[in-house]
Image (cartoon, rainbow, N blue to C red; front, top):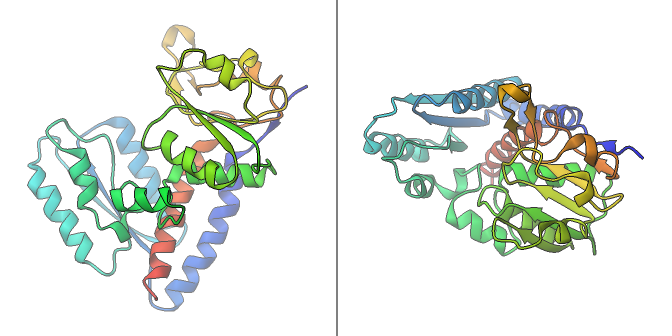
Length: 286
């Protein structure tokens, strides 16, 4: 048995084509969907993420604004820019790239973004709306995962779903979304006593813990759908390649469907950021 591959690149391309059509309709009405991205510091990975987000925006026919600050910038300067962008009706989405330098209060920065422009879905007001089952913005990675489950035909009603990882960015919102889709949800984490006991029960297994190849084939229920959110780089002595939290080679022999790394969840994260920005622009018409 070899699992069916859930191709994030192909799904992303299809979704982005639809987003580009919707964006063009807005532009024809005089509204260009606009995303402002703030980058503080010189973290190489963050710089790559921001560059990819800006490029994806422009390719989809949306406007992108990028504001880059030195790592030692006074936080007041960044807060002032956020306030300016909040007040700018031509800007529909605001994103502050994480992580921030240590002298920043990241929670305060995220709360400073207007809730109706928080296209990452991290503002407390948006988190609460998601918990109540009436989300304004869905955090981008879990949003992408739900699209992948839908596109792969994975049944959710009554399914046992296990999430490995409890972060505010992926694990917790993922649990809420799967609950809303009718799953029975278990969230595992570093204090879970017998991880394999839980993962072997999962019809849907989402790995989002940031540990390379942590989930092996013998921890997976035969026929399960396995979503690998992790992205890790192996050390040079192990080839230095990118890999996920799932040991793909052993897992694909057990799972029914699986996402690869790279080319799985990653492309969908930026795609759903574009979707949130477009939805914010569409709401501005009402």
